[in-house]
Image (cartoon, rainbow, N blue to C red; front, side, top):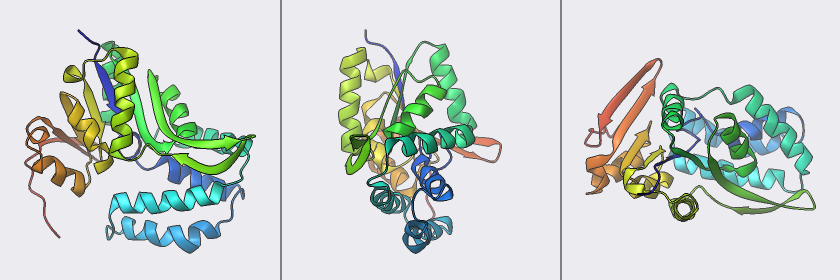
Length: 242
């Protein structure tokens, strides 16, 4: 019998925002990149989402494109310094429910794995802070310690699915007894693969996807954390189309 694992997305599932966006802001704050990248393009996209007038997945993908373009040519020393600042100042800004679940899994001897679309240099630091067994993030490629603009993504469901296959082989995992935690459509395959899928503060797109899936609609637990209360719902929750 294989081992039990718990797969955690980070942005929106553990961390209450996006590590990539926090890093973007830190790079601007320290005058490492030009703030025009944010104020000319990213601000409007962010404001649309902040006013709940845009799609969360579209918002993150657009911000990601701007982020990648903005850091081309940056030295890894700058990346590491600002990444450390993000973790030092922001890494405690997590959901209570998810933090408690990580502790529960570790206390029970489960393999805890972080899978995130955020840059691997941020995901690795977050994994270390929360004692995760292993991790994988989007791989930002450096040549001679300089970012060359190439990214091997981990934000889509296919990439996460392939990563799970590698972890299954590496740790001899039993997915039927394992857990997965996610919040967007990029996590749908991760939720499908395990016997215990949990959607945390899911987007409308993910809830709709879960509800239409004959398998995971019966097994997925939906968790919503607001203020200091955690709500547990089933996948048949009604959505208001406003």
